[in-house]
Image (cartoon, rainbow, N blue to C red):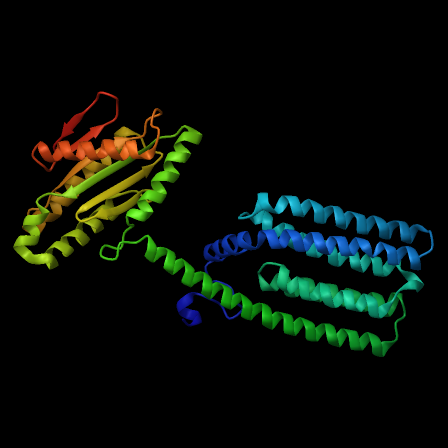
Length: 381
């Protein structure tokens, strides 16, 4: 899979912004527990350096401000530990991580300024290396955000060391050079890891699609139908909303197979799936339940709207058959959710019963049941 085919930039990001957002929703949600624990660990270590501050700084305003900065960062780490679970899958999740690393970088620079003559250049340089590495491997994309933050932090550290603490030129230059190397290495590894993660994400999505797709018609299969039906039923119960189900099959499909063979039967199934895909709304789910039986799940939809869709679909299928001088019709069973339904199976059972009534009443019919006692019939057209 090359970069063009997969829609990936050389920097390891998707060209499509929506796909990039979805990748992070999947990737970061999976890593969320690790992020929470790592941030709490970083905050704890950062705070434990207060012991070093107490041993090296006199009781003065700089020490007081340093302890406040370390305490604030620890509190922020604890806050993230309990908050990240609630924000995963949202833009706030990524922004909190960016804010956390940005705050850590800023606090470290401020502490470097406050240390005065007690400033330990090589110890602080080691901290700078760790912060730079963390920016690249903990901060979410885009890469330009990582590069900008790491360069600003590295430049700030070098300038504070050289001008504020009068660190000798050559040690300062050596640390600046090492920071540059760490930036380059981290950028390369972040790019490579990002590319591999996104290729793995694409393969995972492709496998997911295969698992819920009917191979002949390209529409959803029974497994996807079951997942969506359960989801819609739960949402209807929680938010007191309606949803509807249309089940239909091809009239005299066995005769079509007997007359033209399985090749004609397959073409008919593909044709009906194509017509239904064009007629249904974007929010509806079209499914091949098996054989010549199809279903359409319609979220946030009551009886009249589902009836109208069934009528439009019946008319479109019959018209297409006529244009090919080919008798092609379908029978339909329609039902909507009820407040008294215990499970989604009750809705499916009612729609199946309506489909049976349509078949028994002469085929090419629509039957729907939107009330406890109400059963109606309508011949398309």
